[in-house]
Image (cartoon, rainbow, N blue to C red; front, side):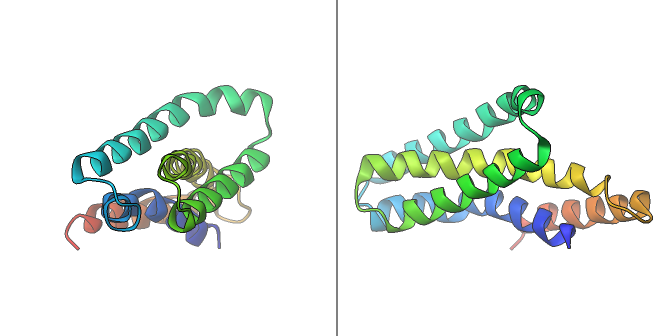
Length: 139
């Protein structure tokens, strides 16, 4: 079960490469260069949250931080798609990026804590995720 959650999070993080600029240009009315700038803010949100996550892990429990990441990711995605304000859409896209970036690695690390034969399940999940990420660029 946790494999599907991890895969969904990584795909949500990586799928923004395809839909983000398109959403900003066609739905929000940005020019192409401005849509690309929004993608840059998304990427900056990803990077910053990867650096902030270890600091947050010292203060917040892992499961709580994982849930917050899921909430941010979902809320940011829905509000970016359905909001009508340009500046708000930029904020929501950044929120989606931060939630996806924090939640995906935490979900994968949680697979090592599963009961049963966790080493085998962790390795198979890593193999599946690396296959999904490498084949995504060919689709």
